[in-house]
Length: 228
Ligand SMILES: C[S@@+](CC[C@H](N)C(=O)[O-])C[C@H]1O[C@@H](n2cnc3c(N)ncnc32)[C@H](O)[C@@H]1O
Image (tube, rainbow, N blue to C red; front, side, top):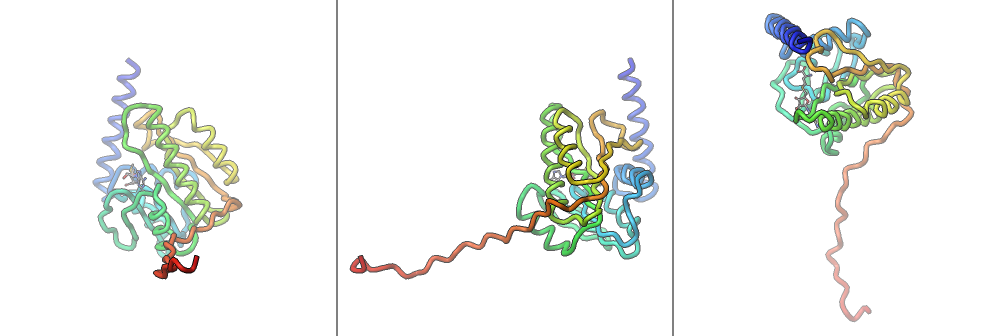
């Protein structure tokens, strides 16, 4: 009975944020999750440079752009095409692939003040598999931080809760002064989704971008048999 009631409440909440997103011209109701996180934790400053991983359809991009206005810089990447958003740079890519990481760093140029990740795997409904895939995506977001996030920078990242969460939290605590787990009102639709709010990046595990591998050209010269 409690379960049915919880589902009813969650559906009403989703509907509320869905309608609000339409009314305020946000591309997704996920925008309100980031708005609520920012209102509570003070993530953005005017002029910040922001990277958004798993950014489609662009609700978070809109919020990041508004809240870093007027001199902010926002770059988003997703497996899926993101409809253009004026003043925001986006491209298609899989963050688990080296080529995407290289492209992200090439486009972004300098360092980021904030890394966002709302990445979610395709849901199989198999709890532990979805959790493991979510943790895997989170580790790629951490890798992006190691390459691109400024000292003192911030990371806001979605994770599906489960037994590997503690190891992820340890990785985050080794890199950030503060790591908080939070569930904004707009996100209380699935039981396992939470956000980790990480602030005060130490930047001590800085990973340099690997140079793209250029295949060594073999000389055309073939030694004649009588050399040997
Ligand atoms: C919940 S949606 C993001 C919603 C977005 N924050 C917004 O406000 O509109 C999760 C996104 O993560 C993306 N994603 C999942 N795995 C990814 C990967 N390996 N690389 C890039 N994007 C990924 C999905 O394609 C999906 O669009």
